Amino acid sequence: MLQIDSIIDMLFNIYFYMIIFYVLMSWLPNIRESFIGELLGKLVEPYLTPFRRFIPPLMGTIDISPIIAISILQFVAGGLKSILHLIF
Image 1: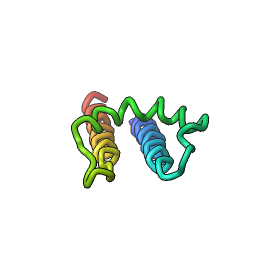
Image 2: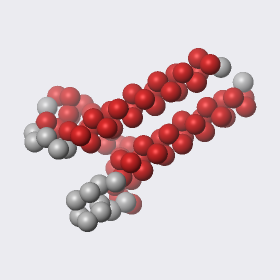
Image 3: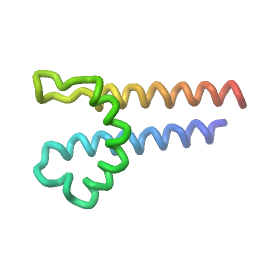
Image 4: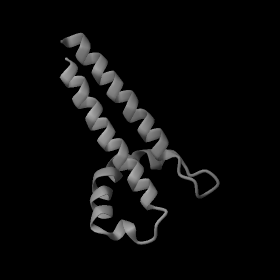
């Protein structure tokens, strides 16, 4: 069971840092058009898009949807580990 927990934690951490790096790339001009920027966009945007639809930016420029998305992702990872503990 410990191995499943560590796999879930590892996948959560990888996706967490992908989201953080993608958000930080928005501060640097033209970096999202690079290969890494486009790759991260293809992996992260499908997850962030639903949150951006329902959570408007604060003061017109501050996007808090990645914070909510990461919080929900962490909640889901914890719930998944709890469910797997009950099953196994």
